[in-house]
Length: 264
Image 1 (spheres, rainbow, N blue to C red):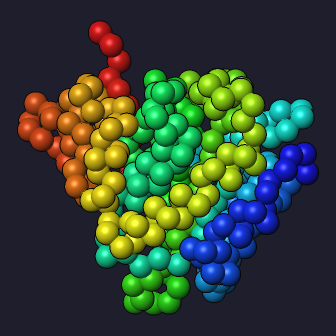
Image 2: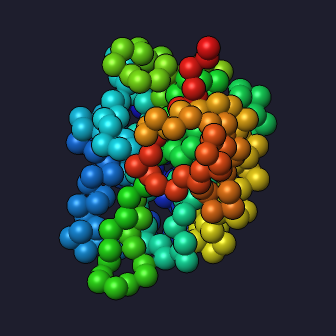
C-alpha cells in the first residue's frame, strides 16, 4: 500500500467509543459499502471502518457511480465506509448530520468555504468535494436496531471533471499536503461521536450546524421532478423546505434530487 493509514492509532481512538471496532485497509475492492452490507446480511454486528485505496464499483446516491480519483504516487481520493449497529428513534436527517461532522473536521473555521448541499454532498462553492451514502440492513425481523453503513468519498488530490455532473473540488486546493490517511485520522473519531449523538438526540442538535453551512438556503433551486422555487433551508427533522409558486414544499424523499437553478 502506498501511503500510511494509521490503522492502529485510529482503531485505538475509536475503541473508546466503539469497543471491538476493527479498522481494515484494502488496496482494491468493488465498494466498501457493498462489502459491509454483504457482511451485515450475513449476520455481522461487528463495528468496522473499511477503507479502500481504490474502488472499482463505488456507489453514490440514486444509484450513481462514485469514481475513485487515482494518482500515480498515492490515492487521490479517500473512500471508506463505517459500519455499526444503531437504533435511533428517528433516522431522518442522518446524512445531514454526517455531513456536518465531516465538514467541521475538514474546515472547522469555514475559512475554505466548505458547505453542505442537501442531502448528502460536501461542496466548495458550487463544486463537489465529496459525497455520503447511508444504507441500513435489518439485524433481525421487527427489531428496532439496524446495521448502519455510512459510505464517504472525498477528493483529496486533483481530478478531472470529465464524466461528472458537478465540477469537482479537492482538499489539496487549500491543504496542499493533505493525504488520505491523515484525513481519515482527522474525521474518524468525530464521525463516530456525532453518529452516537444522533442516535441519542436525532437531528435537532445538528440543525443549526447544518444551517451555518447550507449552500442552497436562500437560492433558487430546481427539483428533479421539474419543480422550481426558493430554498428556505431545512427543518428540524432534516427535511428540505422549498417555497414554490404553489406554496411551501417539504422534501423528505432521498429519491428527489435538487440543484441550484441555472442563472438567467
